[in-house]
Image (cartoon, rainbow, N blue to C red; front, side):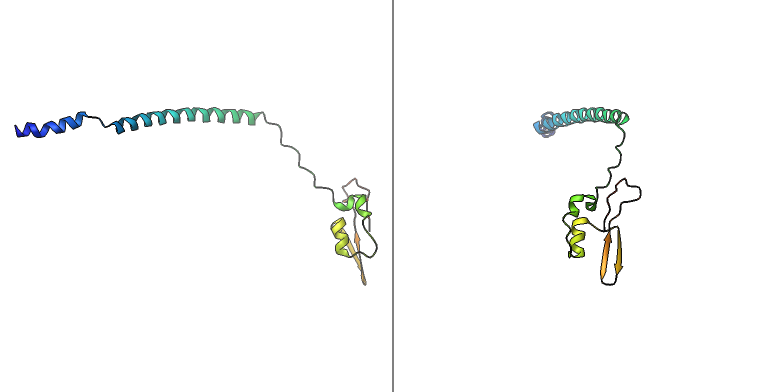
Length: 122
């Protein structure tokens, strides 16, 4: 009889379900469903990206370098006699060529031979 009395609580506990386990089981099922939905969306997006890449516009041409400041005629109007080399370079940018004679340096600004610009100065 004692044996029957001792086994009764064990069988009762085995039959009683913990509500936390049920909640966790439900949550895991929902998470699995959510993951499956996300995987489908990701696959659809990847397919769309590949399709768009296949018909994408060609790569645009390289943007040309900005025009050097010395090629703007208005900047030449700012140059005054007696200015320092640093002041001139500050306005016109670095010279394309320099010539030095005794105590005087001449900054030369000439276009690249491939350029269509006709402006030059010293």
